[in-house]
Length: 240
Image (tube, rainbow, N blue to C red; front, side, top):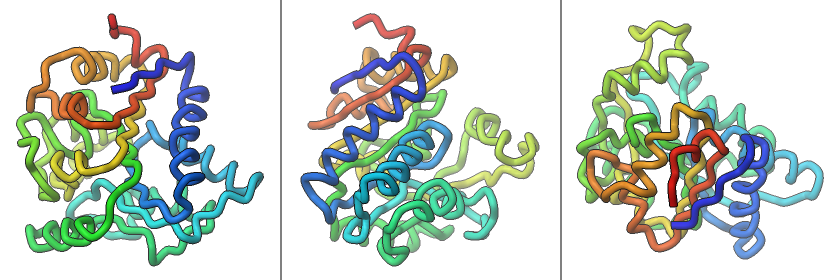
């Protein structure tokens, strides 16, 4: 696990972009694993800027997203499908047919997504981390062998996400469909980004704590090629 501590969010986003750009330079038809949330937004802004200024093309690239809420319409303003289109896909030349965001509410839907993933190899998987140490929507206690599955979201995750739903926790979907930790660990490279003091405890537990299902992100200690990029606040409790 390589850990890079940046002075602020802007520097974090630029460093994360360097990792993605290296993958794209080496493989124009790369398969990107993508995440939603505020942490990777700066990375996506850097990708759009580079595409517009330097002509980096995504015509041959395909993407697979980590997760999506259950029971939310694809075109809902809070769906991850909408987020990805607004924050990244609309700003680059990726073929919409090559973008994949999980969708559904049954184990059969999860199995179909996992089957699609089994036919590709994700070159770099972008990840954020929850305050409780979750990656994707893999909440504490999730088996490290778990594949794409339906998740009951914890109270802390509902609280963290209510800011997107007019601060009304009752509007936040109670379930999500998520790649499992077993799925995430198949990626060739993992790129986790985290910013803000509220993520400092989770980052410390992920990097320096024991590998335990109590901190799902700690599984990344066993990933063969994992880069963790944090700002000074998120990295403020690291001692190594």
